[in-house]
Image (cartoon, rainbow, N blue to C red; front, top):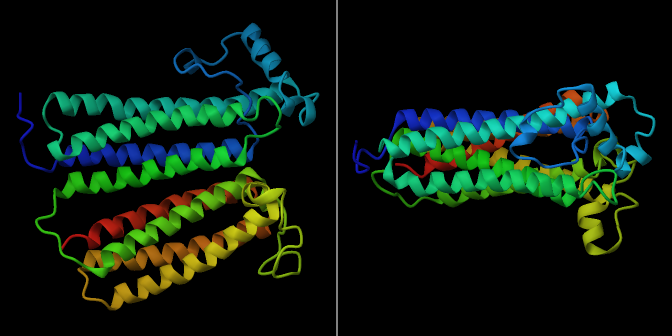
Length: 342
């Protein structure tokens, strides 16, 4: 058996982690489609193992449909829905959960293989174990989110959706960073640079904007105030305030959309400024390219966000906006990783 004290990099491990990151991105896409089609509450039970199998008979389908009829979403929104219509939303949620199981297997099995064969760089063992725990937590939080819409609501709680989506993007960013580490190995030296903190701050700002976007999605706030740059003809929405501070921050459609817009403006300015400075700086070529690409992706994402809003969030634009957010975050993470190396 190969010793754990082998070289501090492994290209096969890096490729594995990039593949898992791609699967996480796919899960974000399917999860976005599940939300946009209001399919997330169609499966009212959490069965991590046996739930991998869909209904196999007419009796099974009738039982699933009967359970769905017991929740408020059916009673208040979808009363009279046919079994065929139920199957459509069921398959979206089932696919999302199945993909989550596949992501878990795609991480756990190669992780065990590389670990047992001593092919996982020693410095990455604890980090990869943490990624595995984060992935498991994401599944548990997903059910916690769904459970919020099964009793007194017709949709999931926006703050729980925010946490669920935030964990997915955190996992994506951590996978990209760790994959880059596995590909290139530990840096030979650390060079103090103002870029280190600045690039990480940009990643943090992007992540905050993603969380704000999740609140917009959870409140269906993209379906109101569909004019731009004003909001129903005003700079500040008239019904901004909700019931208390938390009601405003997490549950007011006007407030969450206003916050998402304001941070988008800030992020666009910061991203373009950083791209301009990076292009004129003595950074290595790869870092310069990543810096400019990140700024350009932020600008394109802002334009896509406006288009998505103005057109009332059609499903394909909503999904594209979410995919673009993942690309922006991944580029920013790669940029922050690269500028830390001489």
